[in-house]
Length: 470
Image (cartoon, rainbow, N blue to C red; front, side, top):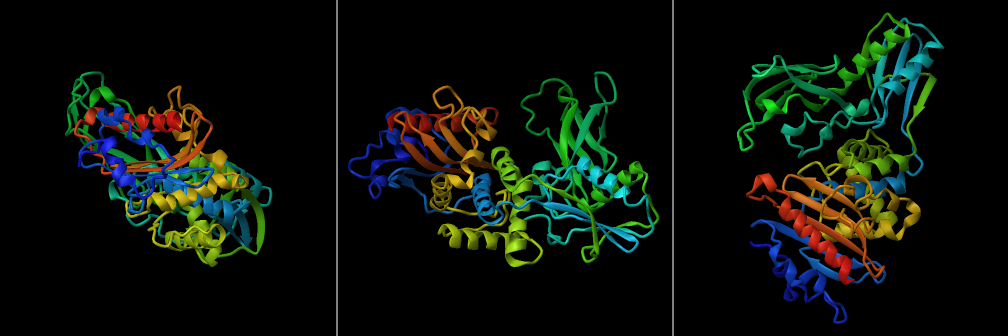
């Protein structure tokens, strides 16, 4: 299927939703004929007038597609409605001779903040005669959503959603040469809380740009052991990367043990994960930033871990049981149905981030969420939206960050393999506001070197047309 915008958005297709007084030249302009998307690409698109709620354009808006990170708008709306002023708490508790570190899934908890908790603990005691327990009962123990591919589990944007979250459940890694050119070997390094090694790596010298069979691969196990292998073009060294922690309990226990030693607290027992143990005395508490600050980071930076931990937290409080991907998704649907009259019953929500390939939603369902966010500014979500050419994931998006559109679009981006989405609002040259949802699926250009170029040309023409012609 050749997706030339002029034919894709034909007037015959639009007949059911066009109003006689409306001009849709912005969507059918002949100048767009030269800006094709690759054969086989699918586009669902919906445009609504913000003032009248009139549907100006709707194409495949009721077909289910992968929302990718535009799904974070759903999570953000449910969190803003239901969690409101909630802050995550990390508590240090005491039970007889034992100390309990009670984690609740704070996605922003850092080692520095844990260090402060430990230092404050020392003001109560400098010896722990019993054990230190890590309590993560706030969430269930299934830390990966169904439908997340195995081959991305080692990278930080797919860090596990755990009640025990520390430093984003992420560490830095590095590959560097072990000799001067010509390079014959590399070594891998990472923080001491994890183990990493350079495995069987074949190295290619020179600028072999078209080496389609040359790429690094990562293998990780449940004890935070990593092996880097595959193929490496030596001119790329050193290579810096991020590793997603595979076992947050092991990782947190190692860091906590280091911090206890650093503070001079002697531990006679062990550090053990136990979600059933409870303290009878709260010694120290750390609270996260307010909910809207977390949502702002989640939406602007498209932070997957915040989104998934928020979904589980919603499920935890709504059903009064450990938060999970399943009860979080069910709670979000129930909350939006009862509080915002948004019906997502037929949507498939597997996580809070949109990272799972199993998520499915229609453009018209996502449009309901977009409209509610902008029509209810008191929720504070409008200001969390990335703005074209100015903030978040739209700051440098070439198709909308050029001079004409700077500051005119506020929208959430979404991208996973073969999918490129936008959902939000554009202010036209006339001052008129339009809501839009764009879901581009099965985008697989033949020219991998310039793979984004057709997409950029398509988006640029589309949003320039919306801006100029309305």
